[in-house]
Image (cartoon, rainbow, N blue to C red; front, side, top):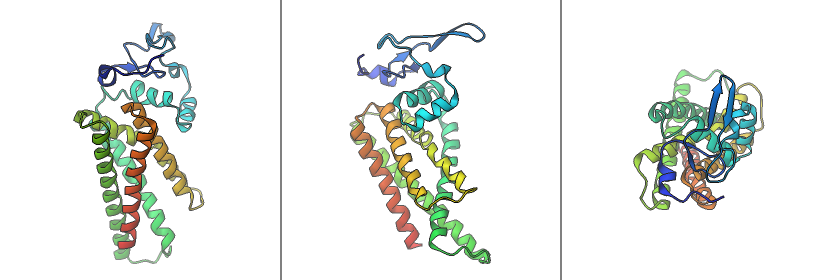
Length: 241
């Protein structure tokens, strides 16, 4: 099996083989409703996407285990980043991430202060404003560091549309933030917040590697820098405000 090295294979339209990342015209052939045959990749000679016949929970478990095959299936063969309306889905994913980040920051603020329910409406408004500014500035710094890092690593060679695809891939691969929803219902140790942060970082690293074909070390350093900058900015703003 040879790796993807041709630029046309990286930037072209179409589905991808989850094993080697090569483009493939069709993932399966349907003979009749419910009767399909999975196609094989011409490059690696393996079934291009066996996840087509898998239950959602199996795919989700493989995503949690950070398997590149599962990320290729999600990013190329389910979302198909090269063909979908990136603007629309990016706005929805960005809004969801913004809300979950806001809840995370509110947990940090609540852990430092009292939980007195008799606080004035002015204090409540100020807290909401702090959360909004914290999340907004933190995410702007995160995106800026990510954008600069990608331009440096890819030698200023990427088209603007590819940056949108990368941003969407990072947003989608931040699905671990959904565990913050469980914290609204059940009590978790305070350290759970940072455990989720680590899982988001590693998941972003795999998604970036799958989409850009960069080395794992480069993707790890880039995501670590972006998340560290966001983390430091967030804590600096919490102490400042």
